[in-house]
Image (cartoon, rainbow, N blue to C red):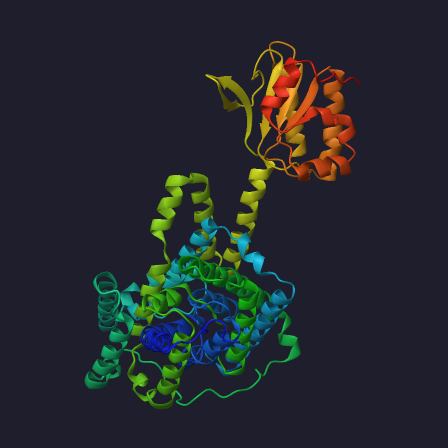
Length: 553
C-alpha cells in the first residue's frame, strides 16, 4: 500500500505537502465547477477531493496521478442521467453513486483480467479529437449560466438553439462578471501560470457578492452548502433501475481506463518511474467505490490536476493526501462563505477549463503531419458535440481500431528496383518489375483473412502485366509476422497458380513466427525450405547460380 508515496523522506514529505496545498488551491474551484458539469450539488465536488484521493494514494502505483472529479466523466454522467432524475436531486445523486459503484466493479474486473493494456486501443489522434469535442460541449453548456439565459437541455445542439433564442434576455451584470472572471483566469494562466487564478476569481467573487449583494441585483448565487464531512452510505437505488445505468457506467469505465492510463504513463515516462497500470486499476476502483459511499460521483485521473501537482514540485502521493486534508478543513469550517458564490463565476471557471481541453495545437500538428488522421480527429470531435460524450467514446474506439485495420487491410505494397546499387521501392502496379524476369515484391502487413485476397490480386497483376514473362517472384516478408488459416488457403491457391505459370516463389526476411505459421498450415512443403532466405542478396545469388529449382503443378 501507499506505493505512490514511498519512500518517504523528511525533505521530500515537506516538499510534497506544500505541493498538496497548491493543488488544493487550484483543485477546489475546479471541483466545484466539475460538480456543476455533472449536475450534482456543488458540495459533492469537494467530496471527490477527499476519500477518493486517499483511496488512490493507498492502492495505486502512480506517483503523480490525481484522481478526482474530471470534466470528461462528469459530462458522461450528466448526459446519461439527466433524463432519469432532476439534476442535483437526492434520487439523481443516488443514481450517480450507483454509476460510481458499477464503474468501480468494472475497474476491479479489469484488474482481475489484467486489462490495463486496453488503454492502448485509443490512438492519440482520436483522443485529441475526443477531448476537443468535450471542451466544446462543456464550454457551450456553461454559456447559459455566463449569459444569465435559461438553458434546460442536455444536448449541445439544443443548447445552442436555446442560447440563440434567449440572446434578447441576456442579463448584462451576469455576463460582465463572468467575462471578468474569464479574463482574470486566462491572463494569470498566460503570465503567471504558477498562480491559482480560479481560486483568486472565486474568492474575489465571494467577497464582492457578500459586500455588494449580487443576489439582490439579479445575479444568481449557488444554494447554501451543507458543511461537515460527507455521510457514508450505500446509494438507495432499486434493482430495476440498475440495468439502464450499465451503459453510463461502461462509458465512464472506458474514459477512466484510457485517460488515467495515458496520463499516468506520460508522467512516469517523463520522470523515469516504474508504473503498474493494473495496480492503478485497483486504486481507481477503490477511489470510485469510496466516492459512491461518500455521496460523490464518478472520479477519474485528471490530466489538468495531475499537471498542476507536478508543476508544484510534487514527487509522490503525499501531496494528494495533503490536498485531502485541506479539503476536510474547508468542509468543516469554510462552506458558509460559499453561499455567496455566483453561479456565473463557477460557469466561467469551468468555461476556462473547457477552453483548455480544446487542443488546437494538437489538431494543427496532426493536420500538418497526417491529413487522414486529422479527419478522424475532427469526426470524433463533431460526434461528441452533436451526439454526446458516450457516442464520442464509441466513435473514438471504433475509429482507432478502424485506422489500424485499414492499414492492415490495405497496407503499403512495393516492387523493389535496383538503382545505383540501392534497392528502391516503386508502386506495385501491373508492369512493375525488378529486373528481367524478376519481381521483388514487399507487402507491409501480416496476412489474414481480410487482406490475403488483396495480396494475391496484386501478385497476379504484377505477373500478368509484366512485358516479359516473370520467372522468379521474390516476396520480402520482413513485415509479415503471421498467416491465419484463411490466408493460408489463399496462399496455397496462389502458389499453385504461380507453379502452373512456371514461376518460382522465394521468401526473404521470413522470421521464426512466419516460418512456424507456414509449417502449421502445411505450406512449408509447397514453398520449400530451399526457397526461403535470410537476405535478398542470398536469394538473388541462388537465382544467379541456378540453385533454386523450378516448381511445377
